[in-house]
Amino acid sequence: MIKVGDTLPAVKLMEYVEVEGNGCSIGPNPVELPQALAGKTIALFAVPGAFTPTCSAQHLPGYIEQADAFKAAGVDEIWCVAVNDAFVMGAWGRDQKATGKVRMIADGDAALAKSLGLTLDLNGKGLGLRSNRYSMLIKDGKVVTLNVEGPGKFDVSDANTLLEQAKA
Image 1 (cartoon, rainbow, N blue to C red):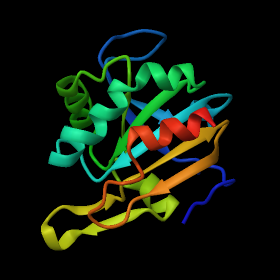
Image 2 (image 1 turned 90 degrees about the horizontal axis):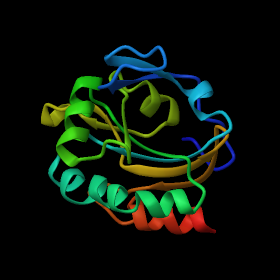
Image 3 (image 1 turned 60 degrees about the vertical axis):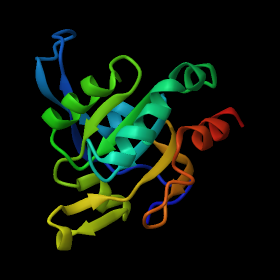
């Protein structure tokens, strides 16, 4: 499992882009981690899936509500990552009014979750391989803080916990 001080792996994620600009086409666009993280402080949180009850009611809204406080604490971007495709993540972001506050990043094939050692096997429930719920503060590609939830928990990956760590 990834730990504090480690560099995030060089995987490619996807993001649905709604507005054309800076050479980006409308639709799914690649997010190459080394380039996307270079020189930035990122508050990244992962959830098992988009549109899930706890994540839609508590997890994502907490980060949206605290977006300005994260910026004030020196965080350049907030990323929400889930094992869904870019279209689903884009739709969930629109539904939750995350645009401009939280980037909705798709880990469609669970490449990031697998490489971090943070997978959740929900095959028995018909949901396939998912990501554990976790949050981390990343500076220039290196993990500064890491908060991994236990099964069925929502105690340490919330926006308030990561915000306090960003302020420290």
